Image (tube, rainbow, N blue to C red; front, side, top):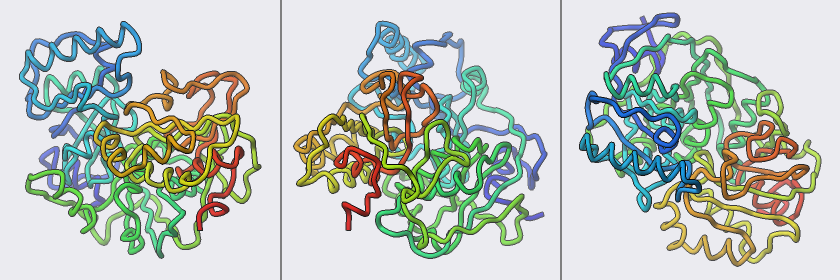
Length: 415
């Protein structure tokens, strides 16, 4: 029987020759990532772990510690990695949002299974990995046993055609999908098609990350030449890519003509069936603009923001907060001059962490405020007050809106 990408990876992980939608499989997990929030809020010291080589610990959501509870979590995390000899420990100074750290350190590899308690673990699907966020108890069990189970879901296939316009990003591609087709609950999402060659790895990461916002189980990309080139720069391991069979069975198959896309914006509350082309969105005044998170805190996102802001100023009464996704991104952005350009324009460039994205620190919204964000979620109360409104868009659109003081089409500022 022919299989999709995710079916092949789960078959490999479970030691079976084939699987199909509806099967329940028990799989070996190749990499499990623990984050700081686990140690701060839900930690019980295990008596053993399955394999320290298949475990990583990343300080990411609350760095440096903004509360005593978070500081105590750091103490527990450091004691844990010492006790069990875990070498992949990304403490303050090596830290970053876990999905960025996973990418930079080659922890997500083609054909493998990766788990973490963070819901945006699907980000690693950009690297031909079966990556999924799971509950803390389940991840704790994986840490101790090295295994977990999945029910194989049917897969929706998106075939990308044409060439992506320069001012259209991965966020726009995703918002077009979410706005047009809605949720993918109890389904996987798989990408392919000739147009994929025009979608760089940072945009694939954005799209894969956002799969969680349409409730997809897994979001996966093929390991094409662009992907393999990226991975070879970040891991010395032998790579075993997985491709979908030509006659694989899909629940639906949809085509996106990239060349026809324009920037998109999701209106407050959700992204599914709530996103529109920017040309159809009201020019709403904004109080805060945010560029960051696992979806759009990558180096390319900071480059875009700096390019839009260079020679311009953030509008009076507007806060532009830019949060790099990792310490490595921050350092690269400093060397490239992006941080200076942003600061000169009136933006605030923060330490690398999740920050304002999950409404915990460094940029919460007050009642009645309007924010346009390039982060992962826009539901009520996500970034602070439940009486604030959150629009979601690409770094191009967010940066342009920061200059204009209202939601605008970035093509008005960027040729």
